[in-house]
Image: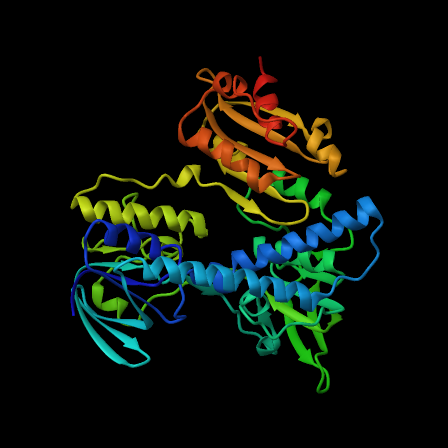
Length: 454
């Protein structure tokens, strides 16, 4: 089979490019071992986890505002998660049917930078291509220690038709990143006693310490977070789902009993078999790409998690389209703006941020002006009795051009998109202050924050 573009992977880094290139008239073949479009995000990542998060948040609100005291049926919550996934699988199938993209369920094996084999379930398919898009995503990193085989990952908890249908009474989460904290919030809200064991002295490493401190002060105090507590061993007790997690705290061995133990120790890129034959430059976080998403081999593009620069679905989608546009043009015409990609931590309550935050601004020598607005004054936050938190904007002194911002509290993952758009377009504090955000919605707090400096 001779094609214009071969795409390895059908997640957010793969299918947007496939449809864009197909629409432009190129012959495109795409393969994914899952046999579905949507990648890790849909099959076992952001969509299912956020479905459970929304149900958990509804439950928290019902208890707080209406005195609702019923126990949430966890199996029904998982059923709804599966329903959402099924709905989106069908949606993607329809999109595929309406295109001319040829799709295979199977893995891509690279032969050289113009030839590959798709290991389809029906047999091998030989492919000769002009361009290759590596969109194979990432997988959970699983450190090895005694008993690590007893630990699940977030993939196991959130995957389509997961076998985990019973709410654990007690759970240990190993790790301190956003997946660890999000899962801790979800399971805690649903009624599980959650312990989080963090190897170092802080969570969300690399994120501005003020933002992290604010989040920790607002998380439910029933979530037991233990710092400087590396895990030594996990022991299985008997034939049931009962485990003992042994960890170190101040050089002393301690233990926690649980009926579910989850590893949330980060993710790492997945490379197709034979990738080494391409001679790509690979760095510490993944395949090296520039802002055009091209690799060191000029007919090979690597959008999304596989390059490790911005491991989020929405970022992968944009990188996928950048790749498609540059392939179509035959020269760089589109560029990825990594700085303006909004990032959220979907805890309860949540935080979100975008752009350059104060600690990074200081490292870069950028003089900033901060503008903030407390959510205690926001009408929507008051409606839900969730008035903790703030909107905080960061402007370059002199030009008053926005370079970043964060939101702590209600609707943070939704509101951050407005700030991200402002960062991407270099808006000034005056332009943001002059915008009439809709009342009584939480976005009002953004324009109120901008007005506070005048």
